[in-house]
Amino acid sequence: MKKLRIFRIIISTLMFLMICAAFSGICDEAAKVCDVEFFPAFAAGSAMAIFWIILALVRGRAFCSFGCPLGFMQDVTGFLGRKLLRKKCLPQKPYRFLRYSAGVFLLVLFVFGFSSFAGFFEPFSATGRFLNTWLRPLFQFIGNVTGLWDYSEITPVVPGVAIASAVILLLIVISAFFRERLFCNTLCPAGFLLGLFSRIARYRLKFSDKCVRCKGCEKVCKAGCIDVEKGIIDNERCVVCGNCEAVCKFSGLTVVNSFFPHGQVPGALDNKRRLFLGGIAAAGVAAAVGKNMLKAPLGKLPCAPPGAGNVSDFNLKCTGCQLCIANCTGKVLTPAGLEYGIAGIGQPRLLPEKGFCDYNCNKCSSICPAGALMPLTLAEKKRWRVGKVTYFRERCVVVTDGEACGACAEHCPTGALDMVDYKDGLTIPKVTPELCIGCGGCEFICPVRPLRAVEVSGVARQSPIVDPEIFESGKKEKTPPAPAPQKSADDAFPF
Image (cartoon, rainbow, N blue to C red; front, side):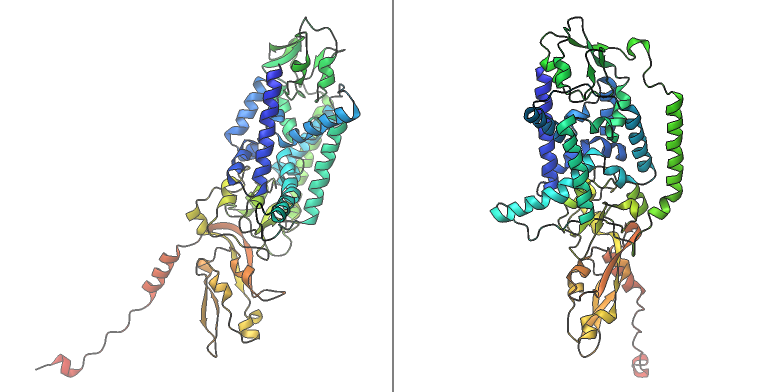
């Protein structure tokens, strides 16, 4: 069916362009399309994950061809490989041991809190990391040069995370140049999960009596799941791209309605596979024992994005796709190195040295596709504590140089920093911890170098602060009333 193939190309192209727009940082609306991605939706427990699973049970791995951005990139690269090398697709080995090994291992990492590691191979997160660390700075540079859009500065990147994301994605794309969807059927966790459901799909492709064994379908099968000689179409690896049906001139392929073809239940576990899964389970237990050590933060606890709640839960859910970083208006979010520990590499953190959390922005919590950030209204976000400030009096220019400053208090949106009398007509900051939300505006603006006079550190559990107006009114109520003026004897006895 040529219509299915054309429809797939249009949808997948639009999806990829919208995801690129979402990571460009200039199109907020496009970020909503990321909610349909399977693995983030699976992590968030959203209805979209159920939709893709049901679709896999009905027809197969349609997500891999219609909704996956990394799948689109592999299709483009594979198409170029076929044209430039004049090669044809060939049946590929199922690589079931490798696929099951990688799939279960990555799921174990995800379950035991190493989501960012699993995210390096999860298609949406792997693509997002690359787009954020490489395409977005390039996009910003082009905008500044051409004048089409303006950025005051190019977004900095963490070299280790940027290099790792580029190497992994380039290896995947290069493999697609020669072997098409090899990654999807070996290392991709989304492909592994959806493939399990596709094994028992209700409707599946099958050779019809009209097939003349021309192998035309086999030559265009990018998943390598068609073997004409053996009469096999492996539905677990089929990505429902429509190439085979579009090229067949003899109606040699048909869709059959059957749960278990040939009367066999697919996926029966043999003893070797049971032993293997047992080994993976043992590895999971080891990961659970060692996760606290691997998740230990380096130095002070970093500030997680607003909406993280319990930071340990945030580290558990976040796949490090970096969509929030790409859309941060205050440019304060950056990929973490070892600040969260080894298990949190690539996850977002606030870096007040480079920016501050915009008081009138709640984008990050509203666009997180994995559910690692709970949605906050703007009013809720304005009172949401992500960190706490510490004032180092001995570093302040008012104390060290006798110069008037007060920049930190001027940039504090909640009044947590206030200027009080010091000496010689100067004032110094005073911290009211109950009002601090940890936005980083004070640290960002502080002129002291290299160590700033105010520093913001993270909190283990984010929570709302008290309403500033209620706090101030409470202080006034606690202030003892002024003593009533004493009446004189003449006032008591006026006559």
